[in-house]
Length: 251
Image 1: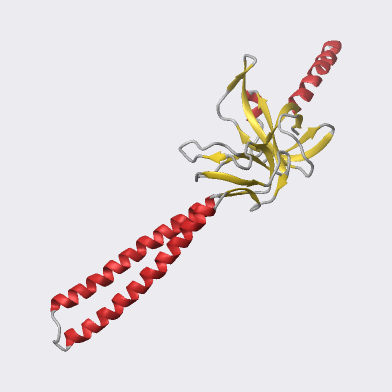
Image 2: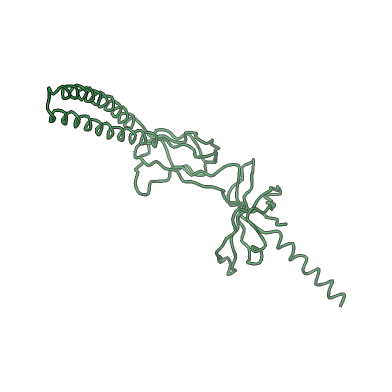
């Protein structure tokens, strides 16, 4: 009986370790594909695949000559329509004074008021066109939405870009400074975990402190096994690549 108990403990011990040390694969914590919502010709690409970029950094720009011309035209139109509206307001003031002195008719007063309303309407329309053209000018430049690593570059100077329902992907970025270790757990394993729980992620002999970010709610099939995905997020300073193997140690 004692021998059987000892053997049982020895057999169970490796299973306990296996349950605590789970194989995982590194994934980007955030990955975005970037394009331009406006059509044009690429003027410059300022990054290479594998390079690091800072939030707000200019990554790519189209030839903006046409967009700048539209903005300038809209600004000139705004100046002209502002002057017309001011003149219409002054004319209304004069007609209002004459009307109060019974020198002019109600029809003249109504026409003067209509000119002011029409001028204001034209000015509002011009303001909308200016904002639209300014937005198109801004969209001709792609900036980094966050500190990132350039994963894919599919853009070259001189290349034409056509905006549409499915614009061509030009650059792909992944958030730098953090990664995700994705593991797959059985139902009994995942039931013992909680979002925010602290775990350890090991990659190529280096350990990182991580926290459970997501626990899958729907099962997936892997090698005929029914398992649940779970993600562990952790901070890094060096460059790690997606797809590398990792080990998640669960206390």
